[in-house]
Length: 456
Image 1 (cartoon, rainbow, N blue to C red):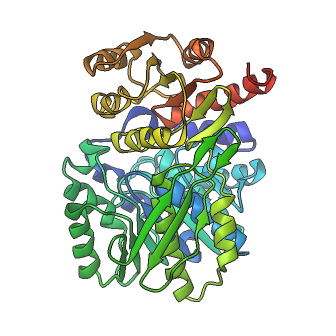
Image 2 (image 1 turned 30 degrees about the vertical axis):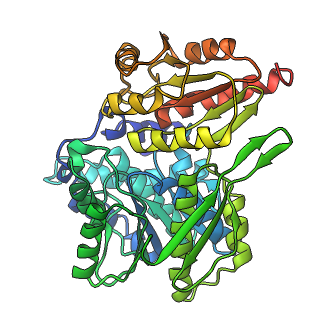
C-alpha cells in the first residue's frame, strides 16, 4: 500500500536499518555507495541539479554547516541544510532557509522513495538504510525547492558516506580527532584518509585540520586530485576573545581571522567557545572560496549570519540562576572543548553534570576529561537510543578517574530532577554526552524552567 499519511511515512523510514541506533558496521564499505547511486538514479538523480558544499570532520562539521547556511541565507541565497542526527524530530535534518521539510512534502517524497526501495529489495544491492533514505529525501526536497545552494553534512567518515555521491562546489574538512575508530581507523592518518574521501578532482577544499599527521594526508590527497586547498595555520590564522557571563550580562564570543586575501573585521558569534571561533574561521575560508566563484556574499551578511545562527544544544544556555547548559559533546575532543568553554565563560560555585553516552564511544576517555571540572555527576541512559551505555558503567569510569560524587539514575528525567534539586542559584548544571540525551531533555527542561520563578 503506498504511503498516504505522515505517520506512514515516518513508520516506513524508521523501519529501515538505522546504524545511528544500532551502531555502525565495523567495515564502512558495507554502506555501499553503489546502492545510494542506484537509489538516486531511480529517483531522477536530484543531486545532479544541486550546487553543494560538502562538509566532513570529527567535530565541528555541524556547527560549520549551521554557520555557513546562516551566512548564505543572510546573503539572500535560498539555502538547503542537511545535518544529522536530529534533536527531537527527524524533519530537522532537511531544512530550506531554516525551515524543516513540511509534512506534506515529506509524505510525497517518501512515497517515491518507498516505491524505489521496494524495487531494490531482494536485489544484489540490498535495501536502502535509514540514512540513505534521509539523504535521498534531502536531495529530492532541495531540488524541488530550487535552492541556490545546499550545505550537506557528512553522516560518518566521508569516503563511504551516502552523501558522498555529490559533485560539490566545495569540500570542507573541519577537524580530525579520534571517534568511530572501529570504522575509520585508530590513527589520525587513517581517520583523515576516510574524511578526505570527499575531496573531488579539481574541486576546491577548505581544511581546519591543524595537526601535522592528518594534515599531511589531506594535502597529499588534494594534490593527487588537483584540488586547490586552503588550510588553517597556512592560509588563514585565527584568534578568539572568549565569551563570558558577567554580573552585568553576556560578553559574546568574538573572532578575528586573517587570510592571505583578507583581513576580516572582528565578528561576534552566536555560539560559545574557542572551538566555535575555529569553526567560524573555516566558514570565512569557505566564504572566500565561494566569493572567488562569483557568489555575492557581503561582509554584513557574514556578520549577521555568524551572530544570529541557530544551532540548538551546542553550549546552549537555557538559564543563568543556576546556569543550565545543554551540549551535544559526544567524544573526547568535544568534551575537551566543552570543559574549556565552561572554564573560560562561567564563574560558579558547584558544578553538576548529567551524563549519558553511546556505548561505542571512548567512555573512559570522555569521563577522564570531565571529572576534573565537575563536583558531581548523575549518570543515565537515553531512552531514545538503543546505543546508550549503562549508567553503572559510566559510574565505574567516573570513580576510576577519581570522580567525586556520582549517582546512577533510572532515566534522563530522574537525572535532571536530582541535579536540579541539588543546585543553588550560584551553581552550574550541564547536560552532555550525546545528541540523543540533549534531544531527550532539552525541550522538557526549557518547559520546566519557564514555569520556575526567576532565580529559584
